[in-house]
Image 1 (cartoon, one colour):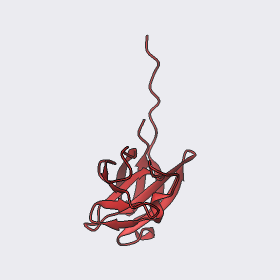
Image 2 (cartoon, helix red, strand yellow; image 1 turned 90 degrees about the horizontal axis):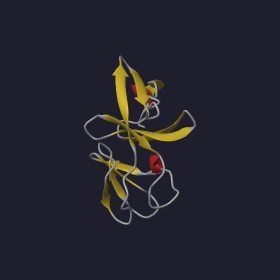
Image 3 (cartoon, helix red, strand yellow; image 1 turned 180 degrees about the vertical axis):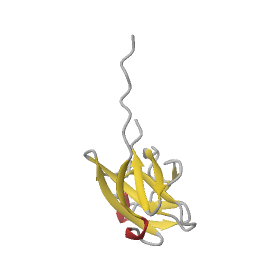
Length: 111
């Protein structure tokens, strides 16, 4: 028999107004650093805060369109999928589920 999978609960992390119009902030959820970012279209995304190439906070990077760029070496990640779009990163970041309830932003951690 397989082990039961623990499902994370949605956690309120901020209000929409707490986020930059285009840009990112960092939150700690269940002991995990997560970037909460708003893209150029106004969509809100959540993903692990650490660049997979170097131990650097992605929340400090620049958002352009639906990409976030790591400030240290220029790796870019698609905020919708976590996939790297620019070297040197080759591994994706883990993406989490965002739910909006009114002006409140909730995140459910993946896996």
